[in-house]
Image (tube, rainbow, N blue to C red; front, side, top):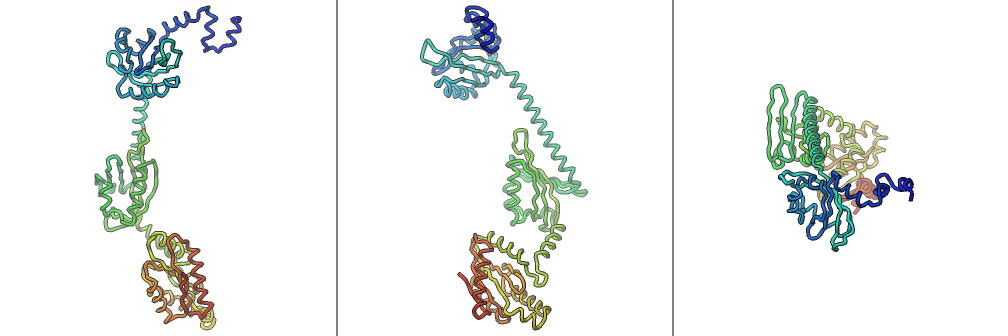
Length: 439
């Protein structure tokens, strides 16, 4: 084969090109091994790993003289940092029996006792002297590289800490005055900082997870949502707002809003949860009044249909063990009342009926005006006998048809309403002025 053909046949990195330089490639490879700066060795893998051949650069690479290293040549593990031996052995045991490449990074002791980082890449070759696997291995000293990586990691961590402080200051700047807090999950410690013109106190609470179990600061009805938000922010980076009743401002429970944000370090682990607490009681109460007004029927002061159904569904969903009865009540001959006495008189009848309903049913019941002369009622933990007794007491003053059904946990309002509607029409189609319970 012509030399030009060899140049074209093999890639620039293919050692077969060395054929062009002489007849004996082995002589050329020998020269390369003697002069290459990378450590090259041939190792046999038995119960341990021992060296069969090492080039001159190998000893310089690992920091030993030839004489010093020969004392350990029969057990190379003796030069490896103890904590890294198991990982190296696992890599060998996993790959050597299958004649696979071995690629591993580990720490080793130099002859002067200084620890260095080394990378090995071993390729299996044919063993003509025994049945054990033999590997041609290149060893590289990567200590400088690892030290640079560690330095970069330290700089990143320092930068992350600076960003962490910057986040703190951003939140502080956003609050001219108020109550600031920072929770440290690793220490289970909460720190409150009061930032008012006449109050600059700082309060630390250790074992906070135990403290909040008995602390009156958060209302019992909101404590679960409070803990869910706080501990959820301790698991992953998040930001949010939470409204809840708290006595943190003093003077009893008031509505507060907490804006919180979790902060993570360079390792991604949450370092702390920081935020501010704002008293929103006055605006919250005003909003609740407006919402309540929107939910209420202007004539009877009972819930409108949509609001009543929404609250009834929530009522049942929140109490899986409760006893509930749903009632549709329709006044008899209300159209004739309006026609004979006028709508103003009819409105008075509806208002009186609403008042009687409120008097007959406990405060735990939800009352609503469905529309026109129809009313809906949901009772909670009121025995059926008591429900029936209350309706019969109403019949002494007003004639109506009432359909009653029990509402089981898991049922939706539509299916319950349809059953109660059928029960009511059962009365309408008979003698009116009655009560019917549909099981």
